[in-house]
Image 1 (spheres, rainbow over the protein chains, first blue to last red):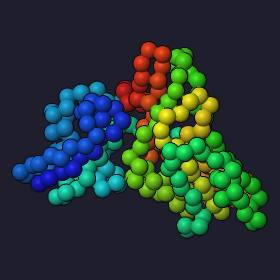
Image 2 (image 1 turned 180 degrees about the vertical axis):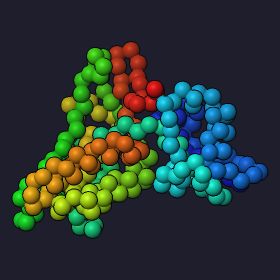
Image 3 (image 1 turned 45 degrees about the horizontal axis):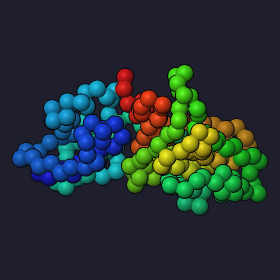
Image 4 (image 1 turned 90 degrees about the vertical axis):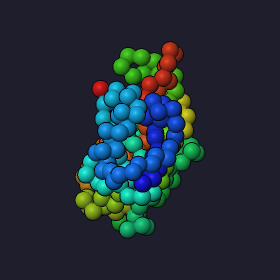
Length: 80
Length: 141
């Protein structure tokens, strides 16, 4: 399964990239993906909390990621 | 619904009059506007400039959701929510919200709802630049 991943704000600084494509052999929920990301980018543990969006809408941890979904990691927002 | 909502995410300077003009209506009894401005300090430290970045397509969707909810929840006529992305200097305007209603209370409430919700849900990030470095706002515990 291919997951297109987008990084923003401080997460972009920590990962050193705006986006990446990750491939997995098994199905994954957002919760699984979060565990994977924290292992791959240990710096993410320093962030207060972050949310996930799939195809430009917020999703919860139990969302099952689909082939070619665009998953965005949303660090704490600070607009306005 | 669409003729009651104006949502904009732009790299250009914001125009407060445009927001006002959009919500103005002969049936409204009042217009409430909120203008965000870049402050020259945070936690006692002098801020030099700010940069806003966004997940642009999602930010526009979330701004639209806020505007639609405001129309449903409050007895208002029209709402405009405009936000800037890019580098801003002290005193510049990152956000303008304008709301019109027949009676003022609903417009005040809807305007506050819109800016409060924007700060919680819209994927826009602010980086503050100081003399000695830069910080993503809200990112750390």
